[in-house]
Length: 252
Length: 252
Image 1 (tube, rainbow over the protein chains, first blue to last red):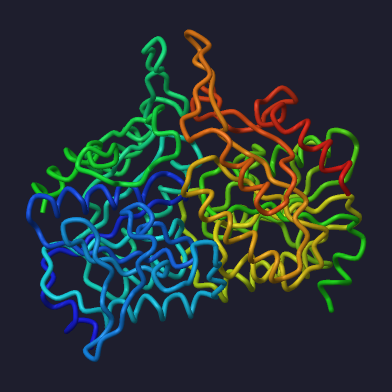
Image 2: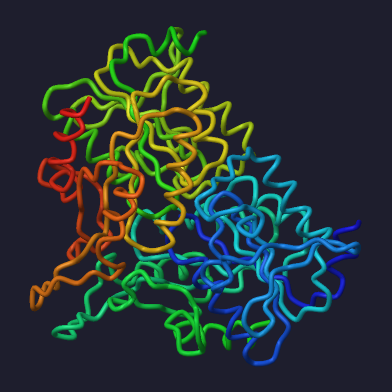
């Protein structure tokens, strides 16, 4: 009741999911949010990965802490006014673990939904933890989602786990907007040979099998060297999700 | 009570953990198990990743289902007699999602501990899901672990999340045997240039910071093409964990 009232001024609610961790879900979420916000839209991100929150780090606001006002919780503000709710912004330092069982994690997410002062938004993106556990279940049950964006690498393990989340979405009657293939290939910086370390065509085959749209392919960036933080309009994560962002806007 | 009796004939209990998903934790677990079993030791794997179980797939027994006898649950048997308990071996097909909340997932793990007919084992390896949620907490609280093996890639997000799990282990007084660096580098199949896509030296720096031993480095295999299943003694996952397995044995 309180949640639907609090989310009442939000036009689109999109969850970014994957069956497996480490496929770049948070990077895709941060990149899409940045591209949307840069084009003048009002954007919020709910980082629903309570025990491995990465959004504040990726959007370069790791040091900021969440504030409380009389009206409710105040999101942390990143570039172009992106509003962020994340467990990371509650703990003192980034190496502090949040050792919470499922019910406590779900209750924090509910608080982010009910008490966070989101205000008017064009997009609320929800970055879900991998798998089909407490958080995806809570989000799919609690808020009316516009749809899901599914991220997968071509590795057989990622494909295996993603098919589980596709079936979960089906069971819960949530629309899948499309699939993003990440770490699709890399180009050797030396000889420019294109290499497909996790296989070629696997994500396309999966999206065909379930009649889902493949809305983008992102390469493994050999020059990334672990620096995935978005610091400017020219950051790799922003460039690689620009086209995907436009496709999502077109599909809604 | 029942658990400690059931695990009474197990010499070493090692959990393989990571802060973040997709860093190769299950591949490392399967590889170490295979190497131990091949050398004549009795090995079991508890796949504690209930909502993203990958061990049966990696050890090529995905089609096998778990059986029940009058005495208890019978593990699925893989190469060299490796005994496997996994949620994957309970569901009908590999794309069936297990949409369970934390308490149910923990209760399945407890059943694997209490009712699985492990018998006499030299090693029980526990493959934990990423993060600091229900399953790592349950395992660390329920069974006396010989120690943890922590897997990380050099990416800044993996490093961020791994430092959380190191602090969780400290808080719960669990020994860290050592750290494994995965996806450390790759060699271009064309020009043989060595590339460090996630950065160089990050995992070494982290292990130094927490005074942990770096027990191995594994490359990103450009010829893997997504085929990570272990089918023979010569499979990449087996070769890449052979040295790490020996180091772990020496350290215990």
